[in-house]
Amino acid sequence: MAIIPQPQLFSWDQVEAASDVDRLQMLVEALPDEDLMRTLEAERKGKRDDYPIRAVWNSLLAGIVFQHRGVESLRRELQRNAQLRQVCGFDVFRGANAVPPEWVYTRFGKKLWRHRDAVERMIDRLIEELAAVLPDLGRRLAVDSKALASFAKPPRRDAAAREPDGRRDLDADWGTKTYQGVREDGTVWEKITHWFGYKLHLLVDAVYELPLAYAVTKASAHDSPHLLPLVETLGKRHPPLVERAQYLSADKAYDSKENNQDLFDAHGIRPLIAIRATWKEEPDRPRPPYPDRVDTVFYTEQGEVLCRCRHGEANERDNYAAMAYEGFEADRGTLKYRCPAKAHGIACTQQDLCHGGCQPAHGRIVRIPLDLDRRIFTPLPRDSKAWPREYKHRTAVERVNSRLDVSFEFEHHTIRGLNKMTLRAGLTVLVMLGMALGWLRRGQRQYLRSLVGHPRAA
Image 1 (spheres, helix red, strand yellow):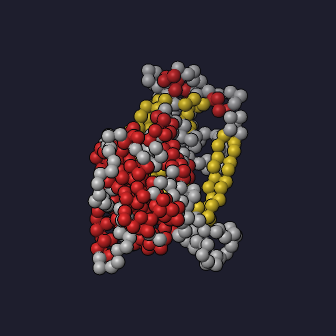
Image 2: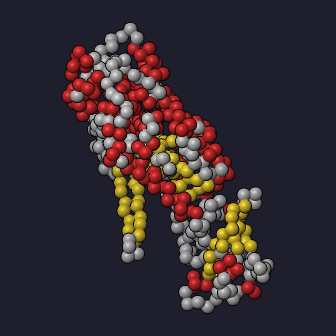
Image 3: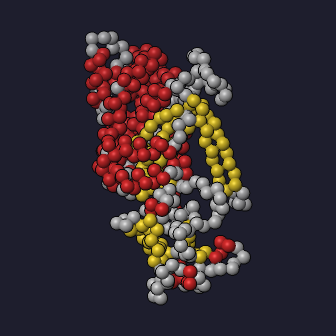
């Protein structure tokens, strides 16, 4: 940790009543950044040291913790706040003259980019320490992407080329995201947004709402291809977390056969991914899993397994009843269902068409193989009671994205360029994990999500 030798200024007996400067001190103590500091100091050895490495690093962290939109805003706060300068490690005798000019932060950012592997190792260290005190960390995962608009002046969306100038961002491009929902009156709404910049792909723990893996791409990158790489990255760096992972939830942007199949087959994680409507011909009509024979068993694109136990109802869908789910058979790779007539006491008039007949006591047992359609059928079936209950954990990643916008100023920043945006995202993840570890070390687990704002407001 980049601790500056100085008299103890604060007492941690009442962390919940601490000031902003106290929280910065807590973060500085929690970060495992000593190796990075020594490396940067060794590079500077023998050169001018007007603005010490540790002080600049701590002030950069302060800019994130205190929600500054850019370097100039941070510099004004440092010039005004003598206590903040002292905590960061600037020379108290130089006063406001100790505050670095803007170009110092620009050069420091370039140094951090060259040593981004060290930043990633710090993130890994924090995740390991958090996993040691949170034994269920990683059990439930959630993934989503977030729009990161560039500070640059966007070109026309139909422009074939962009001329470079001081306001342009040649790394960025246009992204589009569609939001859909259903109003209370049953009508469907749709909202399409466009932005020029980048996209943050984030894998988080769905219980503690802490980031575990991330990637920054151009805005036009599709979400689905980045799900498995995020999980694989987490598996390489933190194998125990992937081994303990049981569920991963995501919205329909990640819906694909490959994601569902590889999550379970390669990692043992049950996918909870909302499904897109792709059936074009008679989308509402159930289909038979065994089209080569006459049978009463059907399924829908939403993963419902139905029995056509009635005939002649005015509404065709009323002829079907949901079969009773009885478990996933991992050794067979099948979902086990039971006759709804025997399970729920439903009158059945189609027993003559039931393939294999209906057993008098227990009723017919049907096994649906996952390989029938790995996009529709998952180890935790979509028509089970547990699926919607577990899928609700997906909202955790939305709350993390909201904090990135509001608390970490990704809605109002001054960043241009893919490298700078990736570095800022990494530093933000570092701060989020460091603050969480700081609260845990001080026995303040109830404030685990109080990453920037005052804990009393959490």
